[in-house]
Image 1 (tube, rainbow, N blue to C red):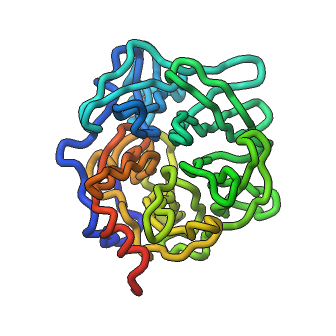
Image 2 (cartoon, rainbow, N blue to C red):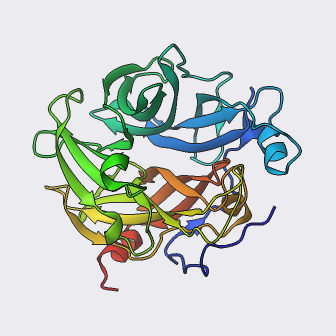
Length: 343
């Protein structure tokens, strides 16, 4: 099914290029039940690339969501969410482990999903979202082998999209996060915040980093994307943004879908990461390709991994249409220039 743009196509940044053989990971690459492979965390760890990906599977009927969208199924499909693990030598071709590496479901927890990986002091940490019967919680876990995850902290509801900085700032651990103030705001209007911790367990000193009103291509909500990387000019970090147009129905698995998700990029102050010192005023990536425009949710780009190579190349991994995982590349100097040049 073709999608209709919410607005006239946005001129995406010329500094970034999509990998020509995208997607880099999809359901057909997974050796167990898999339907939707997206919103992965990616990092370099112990001499190789590592990926944690979200898998929403319809066991025995991987195309169930398509049948529902196309009207061939009366009831929506039942998804089972897990996280899968993959490794790569080049960050492009991935070897997927034989079974999911992390799945939680009990009387209170419904699922864990949307992982983000940060290598901090030589240790792998994973930020994740956790759906519970009493709200969405954001968490931080530690892992050495991506088979055991020790949860260090969980937020109160409702919070998610957390990412850790790869080093301490001012003697404290730092993270970006996106709370859900529905009651006080009366609708979707979610902004990007920071938090600090002495030990990765207890978090406070929260500050507003970026509001929806500061992003010209957002009118609904924004939040963190991939964990930041250090540059000489500041912390370079992606964020996700949402533009809502109720007059347009993009469909997808839902009967009505009025949102476009873009990826943005900004620079944060090295000594005070709560302060934005530069931001590209247009989307870094906006949905234009078929794998970004058509899927479980149409017109969605969601960045979750960013790796700065020694050569200066930046690899940005992103979920596309909530269905596949894709890759784009740019040079770090070009990305910094987008954030700092007057526009």
